[in-house]
Length: 114
Image (tube, rainbow, N blue to C red):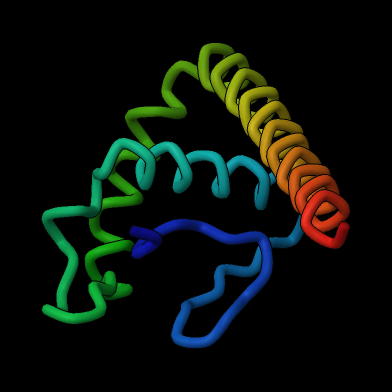
């Protein structure tokens, strides 16, 4: 489920937060990502068919949790670095899976065309 998941680019039916610099944007992105991944907003989701998060619930929960998380700034920076590395490895993993599937398709196509 992607309800409440932060994205780097805006998309339909989402709200956008703008920042003066990239560093603030990255910090807030990773805070929101951490909260989404830990299902922090799960109890606040609305909608029975397509769950969504109200901006009011986002603001209310985010500011409180962001203050708690950023209180230990050095720990937060280490956590963000670890999360970036994991996301990079996950992307590499998905690329490898796509390559494996493409190779499988090519081999089966050649095998079946004989």
